[in-house]
Image 1 (cartoon, helix red, strand yellow):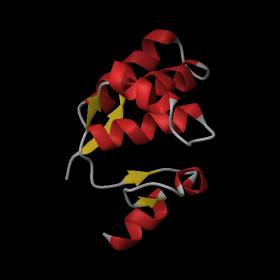
Image 2: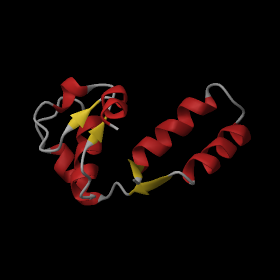
Image 3: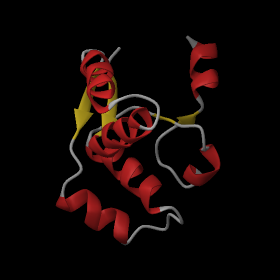
Length: 100
């Protein structure tokens, strides 16, 4: 199994880490994390799709369209309610771990 995240998620993760760690330490954590995941690009097409989507949350729209364009099997999120119109299965991390 391969884990994919969007470039937006990677940037957000750095931001969150940098609130608790020095910048160099946050980058070291991300270097280790990067070994476990593959980062999908957020490009012009994804932004255009997100801008005209029915999502209330623009960031969720970016995540959704990144997953669609990346041909992913599902979305794992803490906030399932924002993906109620998803064409992909959406589950929480706990739900995903329970089916494994």
